Image (cartoon, rainbow, N blue to C red; front, side, top):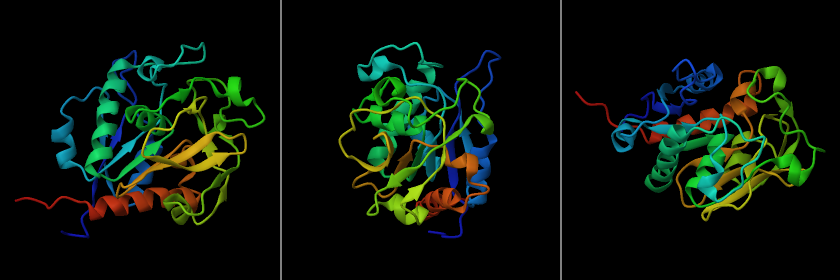
Amino acid sequence: MNQSTSPLIGITTYGRNAENHFTLPGEYVDAVRRAGGIPVLIPAGETQIDALLERLDGLVLAGGGDVDPELYAGNQHIEIYMIDPERDSSELILARTVASNGMPTLGICRGLQVLNVALGGSLVEHLPDEVGEAITHRNPPPGHAQISSYALHPLSVDEKSRLADILGAREIEPASWHHQAVRRLADGLRIVARAEDGTIEAAELADHPWLVAVQWHPEITAADDPSQQRIFDAFVEAARANAKQPTG
């Protein structure tokens, strides 16, 4: 294995929009590149999952709209937005596959929720209804995730977790933009961070070589916050160790 290989990192995109475009905020790409990975965008709805993963060394399940509550026996809510069956379908298969095959995986915001649902867990449909608004997890309005709309709030990280080792801290205040979170944790996942209101903010998959999922958006502040960039650095390093041998 060539340890100097720049690993290929798949990043899931947002779903197909009204203009028939697949999009993704550039911060994801920038953070992966800074870490030494080569980003490969995965449009929502991809069906050739096995063939795709054979070529990749790591996977980022990116943020975006809500998972359809029907997929976790949840309830519809007026605040649920951007449900995309095409994206849900492909990402749930991706999540189940990487959970079982050991591919290094980083879940971000929706990515944590997708992993949890894929493995049998459920979600809180709208956080303010259940934990109140003492902690702001998302600044309005929905659908406008510019840097100015991200909320900053403190959270605590389990000192015995991989995530704490990566961050080098147990108390952080990252950029957050979500109105949902894990309700029932899927079997095999371990909670490794919480907000002060009890919201689950990160999880790791036991017995997996490298699978970390966070509810916040480390890509937003990674350019200026070394602790958040270290999440991508550690992930890409794990993907490098997993890198396929070049052919030809």
